[in-house]
Image (cartoon, rainbow, N blue to C red; front, side, top):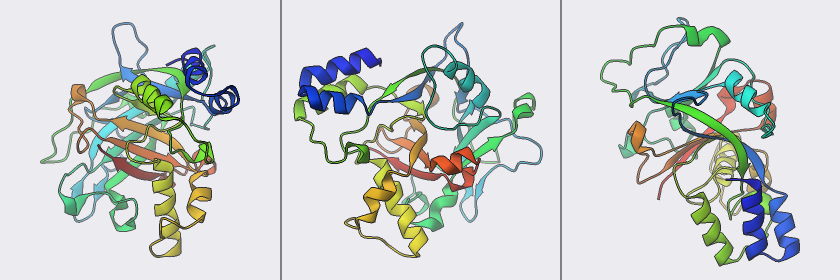
Length: 280
């Protein structure tokens, strides 16, 4: 995905003013894919995490240990962002590693529900110290089978807002453009930063609904006007798609999403990241 290609796509399907408005919303993202020989490795899908001795394997009390999904090397991403291809527009750490864990049980009684804070322990993101990669792999807890390990490389490139993204601010997009964009973006989509590629409605809106409900101590109706404003306060931290190479399958071809407020990201408050997931 390139800026030129997305600009061409917009010009082919949108009036000139709408094309300029839409392309102005493009944001850089680190698009992750399986590393090949000679590629710089910035992380991994699956396998086993390297955790410091004083960091416990995340557990959902009453359910069990979470499964290790992925880790990314913040310094390696920062080095890529320093290249002429451009930098990310979210304040990621420049050192250490981000490790992502998810319970991943298809049992309906053990699904993480963004609207239910009692289930949030089923997804975690840890910021591990810079030297943690030197340690040995932590064996998986008993009964937990690791996903196959897949080394990851990354490319900094543009990401486009979803057709229901809150940043569109009511902008109407023709069906032909939506179909062309969907075809252009089809394929496995792991990424750090940028616009999320939602499957069923904007994930920013889902997270905003959950965050408002948690702060208010109860449910919030979807028609609440505060949701749209709250959704604009959240940015994508990471997205991990279903991936046959790593034996990752979230529901029926779904994806996992971690979102965070930029001020919490800048302050390293990863415990305030919000998780959601979607599938077809």
